[in-house]
Image (cartoon, rainbow, N blue to C red):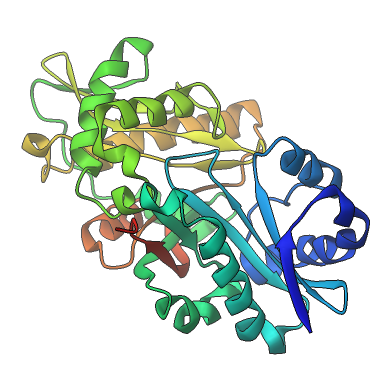
Length: 325
């Protein structure tokens, strides 16, 4: 017999075992790049209302849970669904999702739900499709510094000559306002705007870029963040940040429409990667990879990254539930 409720301090002692089971499987089963919060950190985030957890109980024992947050973006971000018994994944996930939709109904009149279905969560496509979720395929690409293949491709990368009046430089705070204009134009009609409506407005993009450069999402890398200038005006950006001291992520790449199709995005990324490689080779920074994501059908972006030595690692369905009318 199932019962289901929001995790509260009353259940903290009995919940620890299932949470530790999730932590052990986070990398292998769910493709987490970094270890999740330890149990004390998880409870602290619950207590501070940064995340919320819905727990499914069977005979008073927790057997599955769902974690979501509204604290990071304007969307309701569904982070993970974990079940102790894989054979009951579909059944128990359906129970959790129905409770989640009930609890978040007032919020969903103003916010979309986004859910990256990493690892074994792909198996839930049929369940959440029946609940009205839509899907976009996402490809994860990595440039690994221990990969000779990646290094060889990078060294042989096809690059255009920087045209007259163009220049690629590193980030300075004076480019902040230009970055808002460029990133909003680049992402306004992208799938990213489906998952994060902040891309639709100047105020929203300002919030995103502020959090990138102020180390909210990860450690910002200004020297490795490239800016494309045309006659001294910033018209393109390739942002870089560092997670866990060892993994570089590319959160945003954008270039104004009038400057696309000239190979300039490749030059921006090459500029960024040169800085990162210098940090690895000369200063012994323990960076092991650069990673990024793009839509599985975005052939132009896939070619861009592959031309510089990025290799496809895995893909997953990025699902979203539109705002409820």
